[in-house]
Length: 197
Image 1 (cartoon, rainbow, N blue to C red):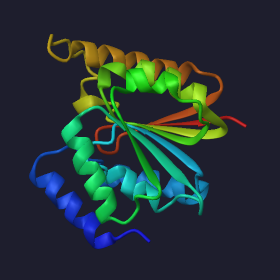
Image 2: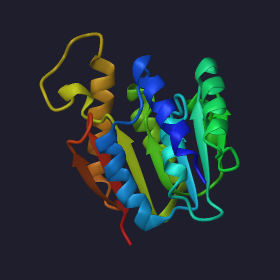
Image 3: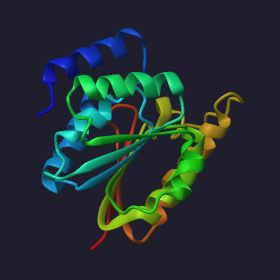
């Protein structure tokens, strides 16, 4: 059983230190889907301090497992400590390194893929997620509206690539005939793409 008290402490520390973690309303929406799905394997792209992976572990099938990828060495260290404190280290495996390099080496099939990493890489993450997604799988992608920039005529230089790539990502999701996609205005925008039966 996951240690809920430790989870609350992990959340509080992340918020105090301004470490981006999944927002409560986004987590609520995803949790409702996971309760129904009871996934056996989840792939998370972007571990940060392990908070979302710990939250998701509660909804796994009995022998379920989460693979999560993080390139920031300090975050990996903290995530490993947090996962241990929350008593779910037997359910979560962290790959340390750049998701762009790690994803093509993975051969597993996943019921659920959660994308929450470098916004500029979302189109690449999507391509890899689709390759590994189970026939009835779900892709969740967080922060897809990116402070509202994605749906506006925003064109400032600093965020331009991220905004352009997120727009490309959303177009690819919505044009993919194998997927049924919804874009929700919870948190900073959540995309839910389910593989059609």
